[in-house]
Amino acid sequence: MALLMEHQFKQLPADKQVDTRSFLEAVSYLPPFFDCLGSKVFSPIKADISGNITKIKAVYDTNPTRFKTLQQILEAEKEMYGSEWPKVGATLALMWLKRGLKFIQVLLQSIADGERDDANPNLIRVNATKAYEIALKKYHSWLIQKIFHTALYAAPYKSDFLKALSKGRDVKEEECIEKIRQFLVNYTATIDAIYEMYTKMNAELDYKA
Image (tube, rainbow, N blue to C red; front, side, top):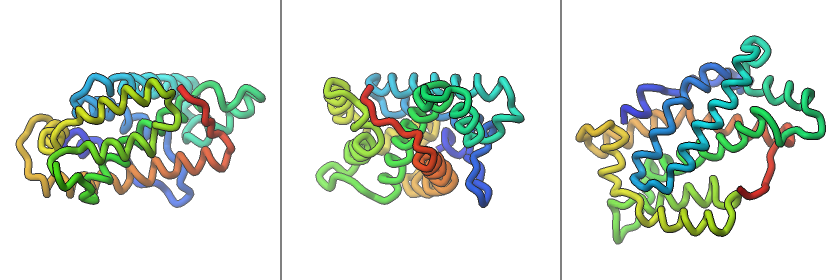
C-alpha cells in the first residue's frame, strides 16, 4: 500500500479549489499503479496519465502564481483560446487525466466495498471491469474497448495486486483495505471537485479516442 499511502492527496479547502502544485506532486506518483494490474494493455493508460501530467505541469510552470489552482488554469485558457477551448492546452490534458484517475478511484472503491465474483473471490476482474465501464469505456472506440475487455480478463489476483501496491511486501488484506479507504478520502474529494468544475464550466467533451 506504500504506493498510495506515501503520497497522500491533501484535504481540499472549503471552496473546493484544487491547488495545482500539490495536485501535480500527488498524481506524479500514480502512473506505476497500472503496473500493479499486470497486463501490458494498461500501458497506454499509464502513458496517457504521465503525458497529461507533463502537459499540465508545463502550463503551470509558465506562471505558478497565475495558475495556482486548476480552476485558474481553465479560466485563463478559456479566455486565451476562445472558440478552440476546451479542446486545447492543459484543459484537454486534465480532462483526460481525470478519467484515468477516476478509473483508479472506482477500482479501489469497489475493492474496499467488498464487491467480488463469489465464484472467484480472489480475482479483481469485477472491480476492474466496473472501473473501466464507469471511467473510460464510453470514450473508447469499439476496437479499444475490445482490447480492454481482453485485458480485464487477465487482471491479477487480488492478493497479488495488493502485494504489488505494497511494493512487494507481504501484507494482510484487511490492513490493505483499511489503507485504501484512508487514501480514498482526499483522493475521491479531489477527483469529484475536478469533475464538478468541468461540468460547471461546460468543459466536458464526449468524443471517442
